[in-house]
Image 1 (tube, helix red, strand yellow):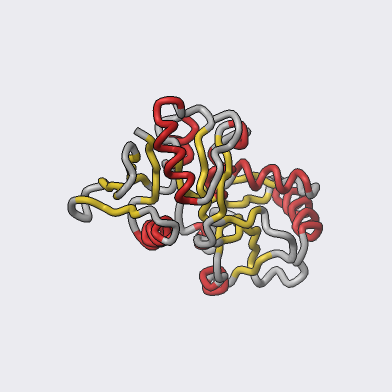
Image 2 (image 1 turned 120 degrees about the vertical axis):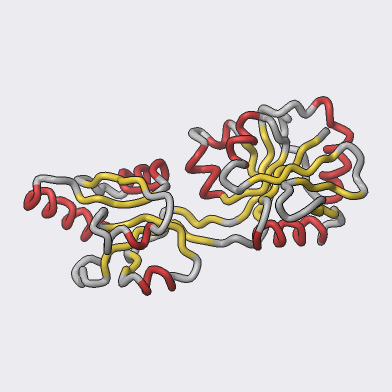
Length: 234
């Protein structure tokens, strides 16, 4: 069976179902809301796997699913050398969000990455400690700050309510996903005037290490419906 992994609940699941339906492929949940089970109608040899968006990169990399819908931020954060493990097939036009760096709005003289670097150096000189940036995107943020020459900081892990870490005195700045910025403003934070770390959206990915040979006819039929081509080497 060709296995497609999609988000298991919420708006992402609904938008994913709509995207496939607009291309002639019907995905649906089966059973109750508590059952993470689904089906693909009208295509033989294709199975639907309901997962959290955060699980999908791992399952793609392991080859346990052939196709998966998740955010580009999750793939690039969770998979080292992501392009060798998955192929990016199609941006889907929903789930848009930017991964940004934000600091307290009270830091009126801090607007750019150069300003952040200067503040980090001053913070270490005064306190003997590195300035803390709370995030769950360690790989992406570390690479971004290295490219822009920001030093004298440390990343501290935050898996939820990242915007509250500054108020709770567990970080001095944050790096997090935002779509409207409303939560940042509500917590008296401002986004630095710099390109985002990453502009993310829901994307259809293919697993490079899945066994495609056993489901080639199903893949051909599905890709024809979607108007896509199977990447070379799969």
